[in-house]
Amino acid sequence: MDGVEPGAKIQIKSYKHNGNIHRVWDTTTILKGTSNVVIGANDKTIVTESDGRNWVTREPAICYFHAEYWFNIIGMLRDDGIYYYCNISSPFVFEKGAVKYIDYDLDVKVFPDMTYILLDEDEYEVHRHEMDYPKELDGILWRNVEYLLRWIRQRKGPFSPEFVDQWYELYLTYRS
Image 1 (cartoon, rainbow, N blue to C red):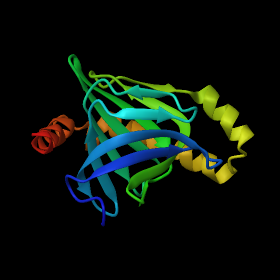
Image 2 (image 1 turned 120 degrees about the vertical axis):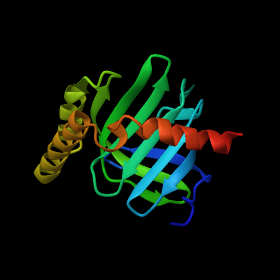
Image 3 (image 1 turned 135 degrees about the vertical axis):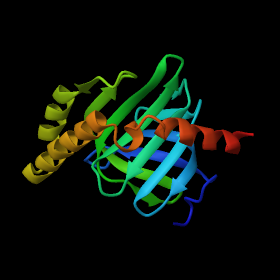
Image 4 (image 1 turned 180 degrees about the horizontal axis):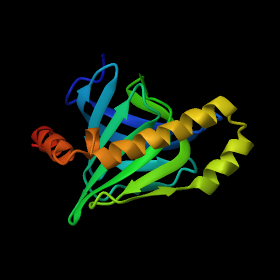
């Protein structure tokens, strides 16, 4: 896929259901790019919020996007282990040098011991009504929460013990 060759630098752009930009990660290094999966990495990258406020990520992260699943997964390498932040979102598209997706508010935070919590259900309900999410979309999103939780419990994909470490090792070769 053009522009997603390993080593390429891209942006990650998150939108809301109404089309408004939500958040932009300035620079992510592509580690794997196909029409179905994009795996990238970043460290100390600038993130711009919809209100123009900027902040910088604190630790290296491996980002996993899939074209069929309604979630994406960020594995953050911290001193005390790997933490995951999972966004319930539309499947990604790659366009104009950026991975793009719609963020649907629901998030799952996973701790190094693989316990997890579902976050932002209240924010989801507010936006579901404000932006008039179709009933079918609501069903798709909740089914994908269940898929994601199953992946976590089964240590599947990005949650397998070696996944983040292996991709991080590859990322380090692009940083030297």
